[in-house]
Image (cartoon, helix red, strand yellow):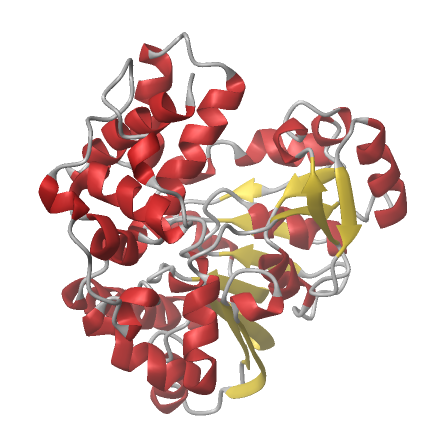
Length: 386
């Protein structure tokens, strides 16, 4: 595909996303219908789409609405003259219209930061002086991290084995198990070391959250909002635990047994009734549903889909989860509340309200990570049961 043809493909996909399709599904459907596109073409188109979604507001201000406007704005943001690519020849986008050629006004602060107007006050209050740098960081592609299964392999051994398969990775200070991939990331899934369960794709901040948990061999541990089980397996690699996983949507855990077997670990999957029967637990991790604002680099659609009503509903759900899991913790045990949110209303405020509702509980530790630390934004509060 020519560069212009890739732009046309990205425009088509973005129009589908803006109409309501998920980016992943739109990309998959396009790939299936475009057998002529090689792996390099598919990767390039994917990058164009996700860059436009991360920078949707600024690109629209520079180029216009719709997929075409976003791609046009992206070219201008990169300092590329779009006229040589929007030619209408072959599979290129149609030539620029007179309206598209008109000068655009300078970007406002929030446009330049790709920040929704309604959410800016909360983000400013939550991030303080880090507001602008964090929002700027969220406009760029996230690094690729691996978690080394240190129960079976050292960081150096993993790094060397990855290098044999042309995957270059270096240790990252955010977590002792983290390797940042600097080359060859698309080869990870096909690598032998991945197939053998010695490494897993996992953000470094997520690894840091698990590293902060007070895990001791022999403990009974519940991952209450397990999802795909990334943190479940990270906990399993830290200590020999009696490990249980639960999710409100059991379908999210469908790959966990296979992943656990590959990693050489055992995890018991529990439904709601079984959770109560298996209680109490020495530690319960509640990585609660949230705005996902700390991971907008990876899921940029979530930034623009979030509404005030949705945020209020999430906060109510978070409080409900905290109240539900508190009785599952053994006396003297720990409840670890985590989100991948940057918003204090989902983080510090939730913990403060929980402590008011549950006298006797104590906050033992609290950590706040932002993309400025290298990984996603994450919050963790470690609460001790009376």
